[in-house]
Length: 471
Image (tube, rainbow, N blue to C red):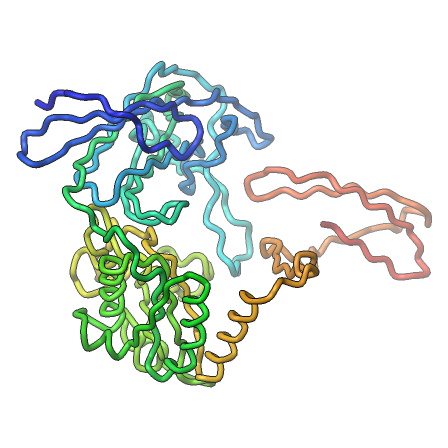
């Protein structure tokens, strides 16, 4: 049995509102040399309100809570997300959560179900069904099955310091559809226990702030950028991919580069990584050598995920198209997982990186996904492109910005793929005399939720062609 022996000052402030500061407690541990700590907090939950919808359901709201537990066909419930910061390298993180003042509330109508996934290309003839999961809504089982879930990872915080994140998803409202009952908490006690790291992972002094990784063919073109950064007090060093491949282990070239980045963090305390290199060919190239990576036709290799669509969303509802994984440079930035352990993106060691729903392959669960360095890539395809972008960076950072830059904006926007060329609405105006008319239009989605009423003023004149446009 652990016993509390000393109260320390709360060091880490909780990131989000709704959490009252508690304390950090030092606990005795049965394991010699293990420094066990407990961090406690009180979570305050805002009041719940219900809104009647025109489709027979009710919608739940909590003031200041904008996140929802969304699972297609399941009840849509508010979710409170709290993020805590612990020292980098802590181990054996455990979260305990005790709700207080839980109230049972009977509801006359069912809770609105979460919407379905929407394909980017909808080829069906009918509307997407926005229905409830009949098994869930007919059950007395409480959804969700627990008051909270959590995950632990390592990454950079807002101050660009490496920490351990504990991300807690709190479900303040749980629902039994078969009993028409809500279970609502107003407060909860939360505690996080962990083992403090015995040693520091990183050097006290920063030898370099940034490392540039590129093939040797780009070295000369990148030297002005390295010198420019050093002259602006960003200590920068260039490392070639050829040297990395010779000096570091790894199952493939991307992993060798990632091991170098880990080494650069632990030796030099770097924060920034710049990758330089895109495809080698301008017209056609084989970007993927195998399911995990592309190297042969790349100046600097890329890591591919193996995340497959299942179901086939979001590409199409009727075709056999699917997404077999995409390029992700987050792989290079996500260096550590909980405990300061190297994050391989292949936790089950089956040789398939970041697999999910891939036929015949075990899913890779528990991947960290928090970046441990600020990383970017200049996807240059030639020395000329490297020189061009280097000159642009140096000029941008060396000269005062043109004030007009702040008044110009390029916006790429969309409207949810709802365009329809012809609604096939037949307008029978044979019994109407020419003159002025006012048309009222309103749209409804598959869940029978209504949009705003639009008023269109038109003049009926049979001598000219008339067009009606609705938003």
